[in-house]
Amino acid sequence: MAPSDPHDAETVTHRLVLPRDANHHGTLYAGSLLSLALEAGYSTAYRAAGLDANLVLKRVLDLRCYVPVPIGRVIQIRGRQIHRGTAQIVVALWGPPLSDKAPPWMDGVMQFVHVDLEGRPEPLAEGPYEHHEELGHPWHRLRERTRKLLHVRR
Image 1: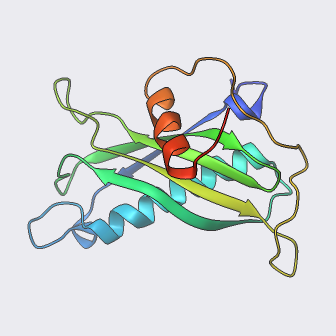
Image 2 (image 1 turned 45 degrees about the horizontal axis):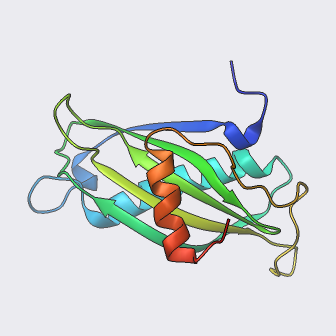
């Protein structure tokens, strides 16, 4: 059952790493990682913004890969809105560990903007929203990183 508040909704994406996604080392190619992360980020932002959203990527604030991912591995990317402005949504992405003892395989932060038909920023249906409560792991750490990158004030 989905959460009643879309701001607290988390998205989950799964993907099998195929040979076409790999580099010459047989692990996930950086370009494929960026593409997968963008899809997961957009899905997260779209879900947070609502069905009438017309979102475009403004920028990738941060994207880090911590562990090489071999061909044949099923990966997971979890996403959550961590900041909402008048016309923008910032989402955090987190790739849970590939094994019990490993660090997360990736994480990142992306900023999306809601635009009108001419491509200019337009206010979202619901205005700015900032989480005031304490977010759990890993969202709190990613929100703090985002604040440093965006210079977002409380």
